[in-house]
Length: 78
Image (cartoon, rainbow, N blue to C red; front, top):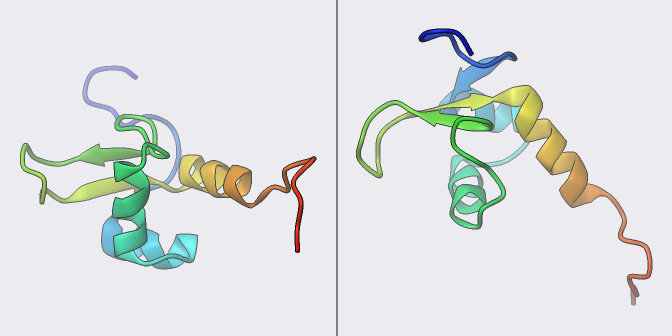
């Protein structure tokens, strides 16, 4: 990253990112709280408060969702 340029990829506000990723805005927040999304890589906070708006890196977030959806070998179903 050079200067104030955003890291590579498509960046969207939460209201736009959630439907593109197929989740709710609340689910995005939950995944941040659980540590699945990392600031600076998956999202950027646009202020200093907990309620500050965020920009989401769509491509990076999709990679996380792909890992969450991937089957786990040795996992028992049923």
